[in-house]
Length: 140
Image (cartoon, rainbow, N blue to C red; front, side):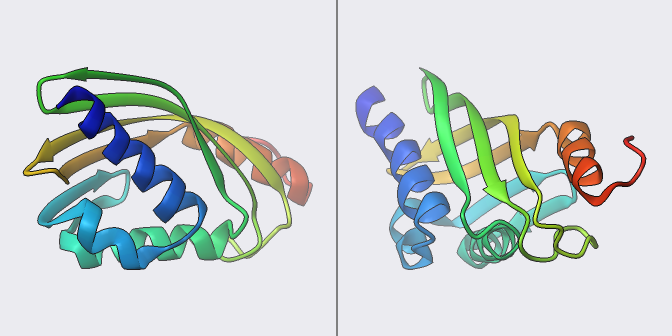
């Protein structure tokens, strides 16, 4: 079970986040999924589709690299680096063209061979700093 659950998380990152194939969300994410993020919760497969689409519009060349993955029961934790270029709107910011590289963590719960709940955090202060540096604005 451990290898299968970790493979599920890796597949989500590679196929959905990195390649942008949101058609696979139905295979990997449960209908009752809850995505806990900095801006609040998103629900179900459609909530995940919205989150991925908005992120990929802002950073269309996104590359998420999983650096570490651990599992205890149905819970999987991972550390990752997200890299991309800010080429679309993101949290009210117009595209800046800024290249970014930011670390983050994810905690997923797997149920019935699908992601059922996810907590995602990224280093938002570092992301804001990198975007501000590129725009010539004072850094936070």
